[in-house]
Image (cartoon, rainbow, N blue to C red; front, side):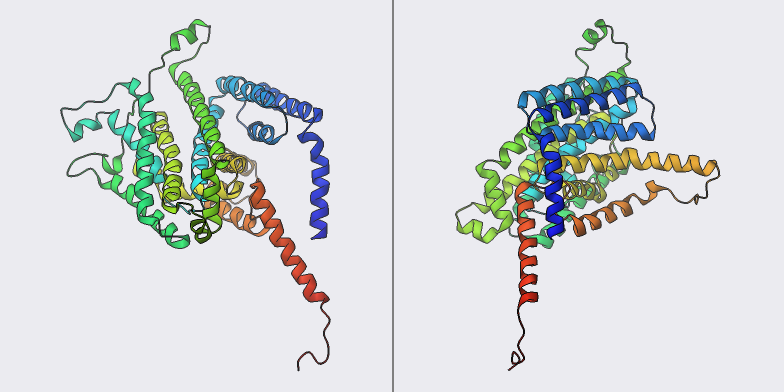
Length: 449
């Protein structure tokens, strides 16, 4: 324990000058500038660019945690996410799409973190709320609505913007409907019921094509409408040469970025409010929380509703971006993936959930496929690598091993909540002191009498 504490203090002594004071401003500026230059000067799709791209995204989390002025963080964020990354996306559209996907799943991870991390309610059916928002826009924006009633027609594409609010409301209502039956459940029982709820939504979407064709069943909904690009003429008047697909990529990137920023602000305000403290009390000891006068029913329903509302909004965005949705898109593995993001980063931690979402999304969409491509090139060059070995085929195994390693060596997560970290170290210190006391306790020959 002494070695761990000394190494930790040494790490803190090394990083402390870089997290506050003038050195922090210089370090952050150089970090963001170096990553930006490396990205812009190397737009090729290769493993080295992938690594720089991940470091570039993580720079925003480093800036978020550093003790520098808020205005400096805003300037860095606007420069990196508002200027450099979109420009890099025009050079290589693949990376702007990956960044958009990372933003979508980061928002989902923050929403699930409210339920699991703040309130301590294990939800394995979180993707159901994502599906509700996606199917709402998919049905109403396509001729699928005419299958329900021939007199109805698709809504105007500009209704996409009001549907963001409608998706939020639908997610909120669905979260309350899930929360009502499970108010008295905890632990494994809660996990089983929420898992069943997520599967029920998927099965309903898969079978709701008869007697009235609402969801088009297993074939899914195609040709989902995108919102109109209102300022496209103004953008082209500025001399920007880009087709509609490229402009839509930038549009969804900025839209997801705005929603993500609003989500971070809302979740942070909730965490440090009376509601957040009530959730934390319920998470730590529900009986004691009720004895202190905390309304258990209201707080649990609020956690489910708020977490689900973020997923409902992102469901609408996801459906419009992908242009196609079907039931397998919202299966149990999607919920498990989002839960892995929260656990990996640190339950109850806002930057931790964001870090976990970025890592898992990058591994899933970028790093593992790139490693597989490098291995195939090595195989073609004659390297003794089995042809059956493909990292993308062992994705679930790798994520499972990652969680096992995390639970053994760092159960609080990569970027834990400060309070959870202190509690974890207090438990470790108490156990260590207890073992020392047992070892130091003298034994007498007559102790057995």
